[in-house]
Amino acid sequence: MTQKNFADAVQLSKGTEIEKAILISFYQLKIKSIEQLSVATICKLLHDFGAANPNATRLRKNIIASRNFIQTKDREFKLKLSKIEELETNYPNISVKSEEVIAEETVLPQALFIGGRGYIVSVCNQINACYQHNIFDGCAMLMRRLLEMLIILSYRHLGREDEIKNAHGGHHKLSAMITHYTQNKVFVLAKKSQDVIDEFRELGNHSAHTVEYHARRVDIDRIRMDYRVCIEELMYKCGLIK
Image (cartoon, rainbow, N blue to C red; front, top):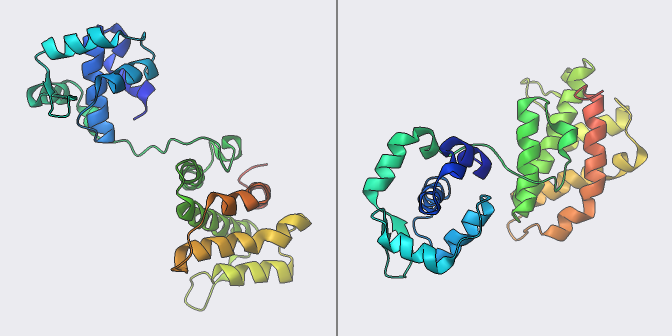
């Protein structure tokens, strides 16, 4: 659940400053598993949630005076169990962590995939989220996965999927599918995409299988633009965009 969704659900804007501090502490606990907060952090969160900047000294006094907080030995504050239980009763859906992936357009622009098939949107969002949060091995492996998915869908769109299947009905390895595509010119990609398409596979393979290797930002940045162009081309080839 995003901050905006939470604020709307609990009508955060209508509360007093201390009520907002309570609700924001509840959000941090239930969504981010953060049990205790400093006054400075609560002040910042109030600002992040769109509330007016509070006076830290006044807010601290109000929190101490409140019967809903406990002060920890670190001079931070956490909600009392009775208040948590009350809020869980009042807002039962807040207790369930959302599976929504929140990410900026770090690798793939949303305009490329938003509104498309759910499983494609999910992988694209995860690619962006991994890059945004410095999970570069995960980003590389998901980039490889999306490439594989789109190649299969391109063959399927052309009615030629059997050409990339083995005797047991499963798909060949990605390397074999790329070789088949390039040798048989099943569909046409720009020359640059043809030249670098196997690099995306190799990067994902290293992140998945090479023990001593760990992808870094520079590895993703090196191919990021070419990857974005290739993915858009493949989405056209498999009929996801027109």
